[in-house]
Length: 210
Image (tube, rainbow, N blue to C red; front, side, top):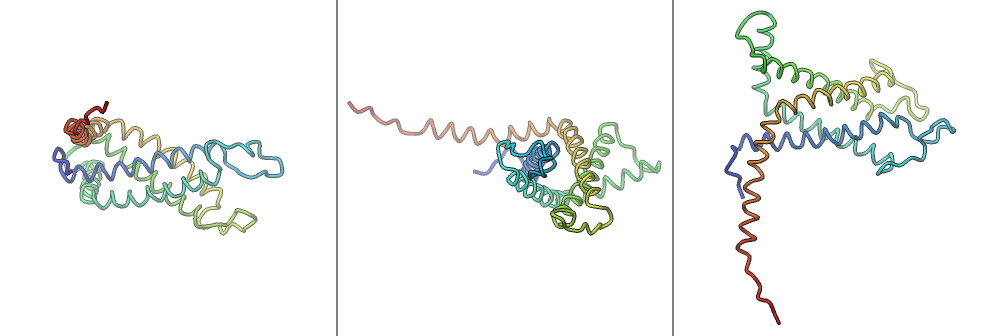
């Protein structure tokens, strides 16, 4: 059933943001796992966490981190395409404000723009370093590190700290938009609940058999 309580654009934005949120949550949780368990294998007895299993095997955590990270990148690309005009306009306004020209942002808009810039930069660094670590095998299993711009260990550090920054800034971003999230979620769910209640109320009551 078509949801009539929200516009098509709002509904599409909500679905895109929901997928982005899902990818972010799984990527963050799996990232925390690798932050606390950075190495795998026995390591000749030097790995104190060897043999510890939390919910899944290490390879499963790796697969979840990889595929939900890819989901985030794909959905973020769609998000940028959908909001391309807004991004261009806000970027132009930001440059005008910083240069002392044009209309000034109010405090809320300025704070929102700063958060968006932080999310954009940290996401780009996290995504690029993640793709590098995924595709470039050097530095593992005895392979020679090709050192593309930085050594692999530096890419790993960039991925870790940019990811941490992304999570923290995204939490702030989510907090200041909580009102919109709660409002649209309620509007999206309410018609579904109403339909379910109507189906239950119109369901024929079966006569008790003696």
